[in-house]
Image (cartoon, rainbow over all chains, first blue to last red; front, side):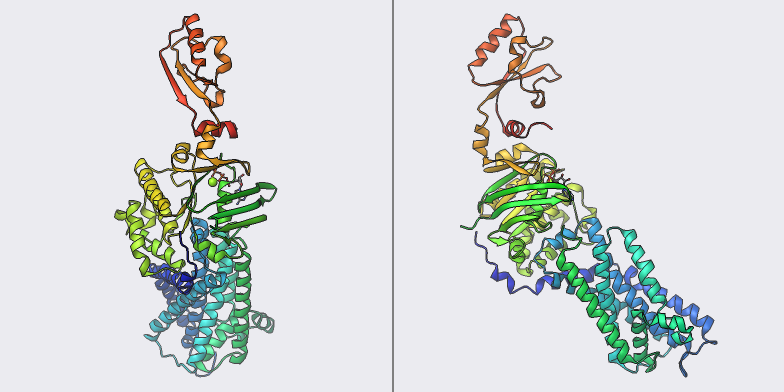
Length: 263
Length: 306
Ligand SMILES: Nc1ncnc2c1ncn2[C@@H]1O[C@H](COP(=O)(O)OP(=O)(O)OP(=O)(O)O)[C@@H](O)[C@H]1O
Ligand SMILES: [Mg+2]
């Protein structure tokens, strides 16, 4: 039996590419649930909060509350969906047992990570963009720094995609994953200034908000639209980039160690 | 030639449980090899270590000369594994799954002809576009086998591939696997159907409590028990006391409820003695049958009945 390993190395990019494609298809096949539903939720928030608060709240001069709210909602949905993509894929494969199909392959831990990460970023961007497009029907939103918007969107969904990989590796049951969502992801997003500027908070809670990486993602993202924010965009971008690389490094170490995946 | 599988001094602990206790095993390329043993012997653990799903506590494993941990990419390219559990991905249909699986091994469109062949040879043609979730248990098993073959690995390991599978697939499967073996693929299987191992495999390892207790060619194992067995049907009568020492142990079915007795013969000439004793006791023999020892006897002899 002749067996030539070198022949396969030429095609080595095809392996992570296949996994990336499969992860994309996995959410795209159920896009009603993975894209349409979160867009719907965001629009409901928009409808209710803007209706109640538009007349009363003006966060920045010249920026109506509804306009202020949209980037925050986009980013919030983008982050939650990026997290959901990698984490739900991993937990499902683990519970179903079909994770072995991946573990049996020559995919390196880096390739595995990049494929999950890229699919999470795409899901996040698709959801964020969809909300933007639908919101455009109702209100005009300025785009002051498009590259900043893109940078925050990619880094933010990457950060949450990587975090989803960690959660997916760690959780053994669906309810552990739900706990992760409800006790970590949800509070951090809601307390990050999606619905308000942190300047409207008492000083103590302003300080606390500064410890929340989600705050920097939302504030920087919003800065890309209005050219105004609670803090300087360079700072937000640095915090988000550093968080992204730290979490990615942590995820890679976990994958490399085989923690909870290879006994 | 590099052996297909080389395992040296392999130990695996699960907490306090010493699941594998120093396994040494070499399987040459082109062999059709059976790994037998009772539930919990450590067969799947051994296979999972080969596949890199588990990591050894101590010892070395290599597939086609590639170390399973240090050269894992080469080793996994060379290996196809059919897991014992019936796992599947509910999101995709059979053909999609097979394409993805081949893709993970760097294979693309050029591999589609092989995938079609696997689909056909395993009788999955009608189901190629059926979602994995909607397949029956036996069909899922076929898809699982197909998945292990998707990248055409030189070494194929099947962990109980025929559990819960109908006669048709067994024949289909073994024809296909025999063909792959003729073409040079190394085949390693575990099964609790010992006739399968006896007819298919040229060499057998028997495991018990994490150790290999016998490793030999199938023929040599069968020759270990030169004894033949004599099965007697006596109707209402019981076996004369003088013949009781010849009875097989109860674990091996010495006395059946139907009134059948099975005696072990050290040599065939004992038949004369047995018949004489029966005649003396005026017992009428309803039926009589001379049976060769088979793998099950060897198995029971080596492993004992738990
Ligand atoms: N992941 C694990 N954690 C703890 N113990 C395990 C694990 N996997 C297997 N074992 C134990 O190791 C021993 C060997 O199990 P293994 O699955 O290898 O047996 P087997 O020979 O394949 O049996 P069967 O014929 O039932 O498939 C058993 O005692 C089992 O309980
Ligand atoms: Mg087993």
